[in-house]
Length: 373
Image 1: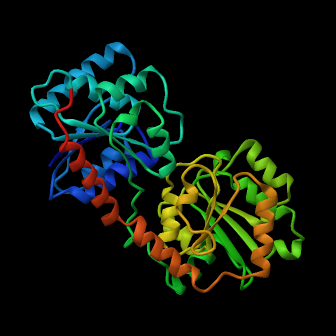
Image 2 (image 1 turned 45 degrees about the horizontal axis):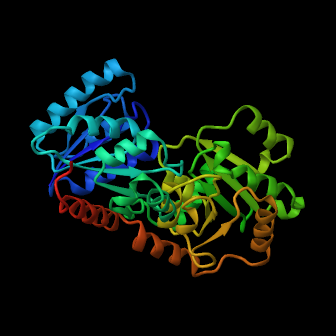
Image 3 (image 1 turned 90 degrees about the horizontal axis):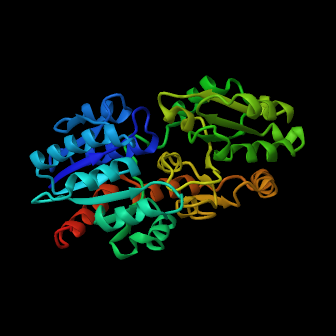
C-alpha cells in the first residue's frame, strides 16, 4: 500500500508527531510510506531517521494566498506518488488534502484521525465529511462517539487506541528504580509512595487536584507520598499555588525530560488526571512500565484502565475523591498483582503490533469501498 501521512504542526507537534512516527515506523519496509510535514517539525526529524520512509517538506497555511500554492504542490505530490491513501491528522492538512485530490483521475482515499475531544460541528466539518473523508479514526470510544454524532456519521468510523513501544517502555528493574529515585528525588524514606506523571504541567492536566488533596493530610501522612510531575516547570500562579499550600517539599518538577522512562522508573503509581483528554500516551507508557495508573474520568481516560485491577478512575478535578484515594493508599498498600496487570493491559491493548494491525485493517476497509467522489 502507498500511504501518505500529513501533519501541519511546524514545531513539537505533541502526540500528533508521536502518532505519525509510530505508524511510519510500523509500516516501513512492508508499505511505501511518505510523511509530509514542515521541515522545522519534530515529526520531520523523527521520520527522517526511519529507514525507507520518504519525508517531504510542506506547509499547511490557512490564509488563501499561501494555501493555494501549497495545495498545488500537494496535488503534484499526490499525482506523482499515486498514493492509495492519505492519512490526515488536523483540520489544516485535512482541508488541503481534500482540495488537492479533487478532480484527480485516481484520487487517494482520505482517513482522518481525531485526536481530541473538541466538538465536531460547523461548515468546515460538513464540507470535509462530504468531499474530503472516506473514513475516520477515534483514538478512544469517547471520540468515536463524537464522530458518529456528527457529519461523519455516514462514513466508516473506528476506534484505534494509541500504541506505544512496549519493548522500550518496560518495567524497570530494582536497580534502575533506585537510581532514578536518587537522581530525581534524593534521599526519601523507604516505603514512600511516589506518584509520577509525564503528561505535562498545564493546569488542564489536573495534577493540582492531587497537590490540593495531599495538602489536606497531616504531615506524618503526607510524608509517605511524593508527587513527581514532568514537563515545563510551572510558573506564575501555578507555582505560587503550590507554595501557598506549603507543598513544595512534596512536589517535584524534574522539567522536560529527554527520557520519560526515568520518571516512571522512579514511580510506584502513574497518573494522568486531566480535565480533558482523548487518548493519553503518558497513561499508556505508565501502564507499559508496569505502573498501576490513576486516571480521571475525562474523555477517553477511563477506557485505558480497569478500576481496581490495573489502575483507578477518579472524578476529574474532585479534590475530595483524590483525598479519599490517598487515604485509601495509606490503609491499603498496592496489590502485588497490579503491576503485572498494568503491563498485561498495555501489551493487550496499546502495543505497537496491536496499534499497527488495527490501523492497517481500517485502511484496507476504507480502500475496499468505492472510489471517493
